[in-house]
Amino acid sequence: MSVEKIVFDVGKIDQTWEKYDIVQAYLVYNERQTPYKAILKGNKLVAIVGRGYQVLPNEIVKQVADDIASKLNAEPLRVADILARYMPRGARFEWDNAYFSKDTWKVYLPYVLSEWHDIDGRDKCKIGFAFRNSIDGTLAFSVTGFTFREVCSNGVFIGYRELARYYHKHTKSLKIDLDSVLHHTMEVITSMEKVLDAYRKMVELQLNEQIAESIAKSRLPRKLLPPYIQTEGTELVWFDESKTVWDAYNDITERIWHNVRQDVVTKNRMFDQLHKTLKPIIKVI
Image 1 (cartoon, rainbow, N blue to C red):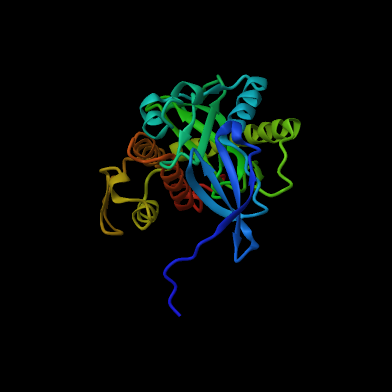
Image 2: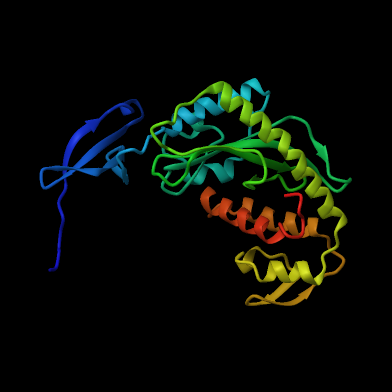
């Protein structure tokens, strides 16, 4: 039997988040409720999700993140050229430090503390945290680590599960407890000391053949690799032994961060790939 078109009817309409232009429409098929609902924002279909999916508007997460940041004396990180490309129209100033996905359903909100940390005289870094959320079922409500480097003004999202983080799926039990979120965010900040230690190890570690080969064989796009790591496909051809792992890490993260054509989801995926590549070498993170 060939099926050209399946038509669903709409049953109950949930307008709990109408203030944020979000509507949830429960789907009916053959006059029976299905286990699915449609999420719509601004008359656009966001996603089809299970009935138990708990929508948490990104606007609410922004309010919570700003509140937590205020309690911790953290500042929102603003980088205009990177932010503006995928920000919803008419919301540029309201969203401030929000990094959006191309469809604007996913958002990352980075904040940094004021103190600069010395990286063995080679650089200075600020540590902080990033709130994440989506309204399309692809990201949990979470808080993870973040660093910002002085020399090239580039940030890095740190997503290691070995480090402290706050993570809550969009289930019916999702309720924002500010005290709990604050407690976990403080743990995230404390765990960032391990990342600073890892950065200092990178400064001391010379780029060798094993590390260069790991980078060459990684899934990182070739355009992200620095000129002193040359490859043919995934095969290492040549590398500069005078460079350190810190040089390579910073050159790659700088290219990721400052690429205005990549949305935040792509940037985060590239950061994760780089950290996965270096993790066996820099075991602190």
